[in-house]
Length: 362
Image 1 (cartoon, rainbow, N blue to C red):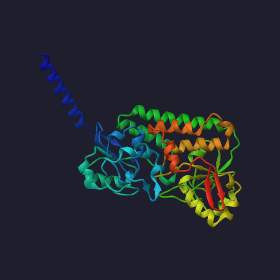
Image 2: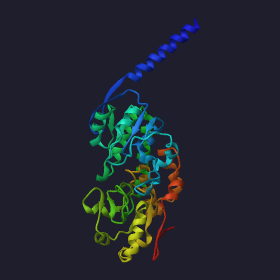
Image 3: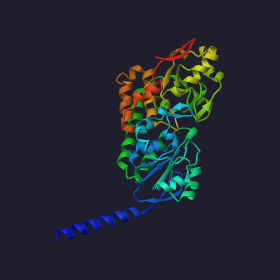
Image 4: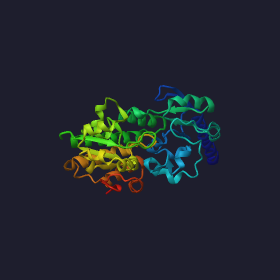
């Protein structure tokens, strides 16, 4: 009798699991598209840098294929360590199949996608989503991304909530959103009563590395600490290129350099040192870890804000040790402290020394 009960129980479980796997639901993705997906998502492919968010959501174990660029140590000649999420998963990538080269605007290999049979495909690029669905028959879900038009932290939080819902990871989504809110609140409280200092950030990447004239208006790391980003005066949002003459006119009190553009700035300095000498703050410049690298590094954005705040208002951040704060942030978002690894590749969080032979970071 007991044997019969066990057999019947096993049959019921199998039937239930089969029914669950066969269930479908229709959702509205973050581009407003209706997409029919499995009730339970077990097999994921994430393209156009959306893999970063799958790592944030602690769902990398569901990834069944990646873009070829996720396996490369260099992207456009730049060390891939600039993708913080990549450092957390790079040791797991060798045995995962690829579905094409990948990269902004690139279409994946349709035949490979079909053979791998993911439950869903995630992307940031709405323009390609319909084509991918038509060619593969696989649901393609578009996530929200502001691109070069400017970073919106509220959209990030909505993305986490959206992923939490469809991946059955609501608790993780709430955890990340709470941490973001607490971090921004902490940064604001530390700096809201200070007289705003003028700041410029140069060398910001956007589809590749750039020099000193590459910057970002309404840069979130600066907004959160209540300083005056001189690039906001350009009248645009997001990534912009400015004239060197304008930077001289602004003459900000503080200059920070995105480490991804450091070598280009060094080359430019050697050709035109007089330009840099006209900037009052150039002798006290400091470096930041890359903000954009195959789209935005959210955890770096928060960490950069603490570093900039500590550099400008040290009395307000006396209790903050940059290395310890980095460990906290990286573990929260990536499950691993990758500070040492990224520091080996990028000379972030140091003072820039300009000499006749070039640039060094102390």
